[in-house]
Length: 429
Image (cartoon, rainbow, N blue to C red; front, side, top):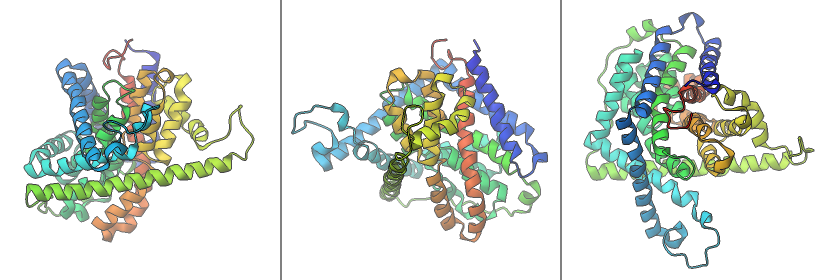
């Protein structure tokens, strides 16, 4: 049965699309068919993934796969760091079991392991086949050219800069619209390695966390494609002028080469995540210390989190969040954009079960599951400057807009999930 909150989410879907149209570079080229196709793909995926028992059971089984990956990574960490990793017997009396969850030992090693497995599966052809299958779907349903569709699909599993490497030989031949689309999709999705990390963070507070995180990253890709096409419409004439060239796919010389390069890539990502968290959390603490000089407002001290909560509360409403939970949801959205999605997921995982309904946690999981944040602007600028040095100035001008498009793409996915009747999501009506 459709509730008032479902209708609120539907209104949010319309408002997000309308907002992007208002800021479009060419409002006359509104992609009506793409709107129908992209939202249709998202709704179909959500209904199939959660409405079909067999598919839902398969998604649920991913939880055990993710748990296995996390436990395997923990075994490696325990071998190197011993009791410091939180595994095994502790040499001192344990008074707070929760303190054993150390982000650096529990989450970052998972990124290393999954990056290595992704490289190995790519070398064996398994991940490459899955990527091409998604690329075919995007090409047929959303009108993307082959190379763009392939790179957008690869981004879902490999990450915002790693995905486009699959078509590196073709990148300089992409139109401005296609390049903007790739950056936006990268901001809207997450990589396979971070998916497992998010599941590790949410496993204690959100039932079926693995299924939701996996679905969130998949359905945000068509949302990113849609909003990118609205903001920077397709230019068929420019596409027709591009010459066809052969695609040079990423290759490894052997399985061991894939493992070693996967470790190297994973280490860079883990170090980047750790460095961003340290710096941005420290910056927030610094700003909060300065805001502490201001008089309390509403009986509580002024803080970055409270300010973000009020600023992003209207966005939380658009997702279909109930009024009593709009402020904490707004804080999470603001934290995701201004800091990182990791920081936001950590905060979401730390909120006691009694303080947020399961429906709100599900919606926020979809809204937070994307790389669209200020730090990613620098990551994309650095990555694409290496891949496309001759178009660096063009990338500088579009990467900020791509971040906003990626942010609203995850919000669009969350609003669509919020519009789905609670029974389909396995929640009481």
